[in-house]
Length: 243
Image 1 (cartoon, rainbow, N blue to C red):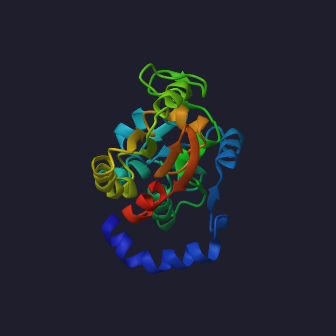
Image 2 (image 1 turned 90 degrees about the horizontal axis):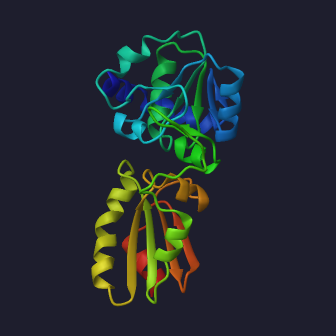
């Protein structure tokens, strides 16, 4: 059903996004992290739907959120349990899956779907609270195995140029860039140190460094940040910055 939905509506959705921007369209509301949080407070009884995988959900999610995996086999059945005439909040990690889920819901009669623009990465970037399955965690709490800002500063203390890659397992551009980053690590080992940091496992560090989108590459020379790039970039572009 979802594949057929994508094929038959792709052109329509493109036109919809181009014409409606990030505000409203027939009950679809695309909100910033702060706006999303405020709207949840205004409508505390409205369901909050996290459309990521269960593994992603377990690492941190919005309080009271339900996990309806967009990529799972039961999404349609789970969504059908909701009242289509009432408000629903939807989010994922960076926005792609929640936009697909939102448009699917709209096409199936939901009248008020509020989407978190940029996903939970923007939520974290705004220093808003998350919870795990059992314990609510404030923005100031750090797990024992997480990198703190102090530990990060130790990592970038090097006589070599330090190339830091902020990535996530779900991030398609991150996966595409990983092989050439490994090549750089070997080919330029005499002068470059490559450090890869999983954003999901180091949420507080990403907040401290204002990392609210992925992938992000940073270059440090003598502990000073000299280059910062967000989004996909080819190997040649990175090597140029390292020379």
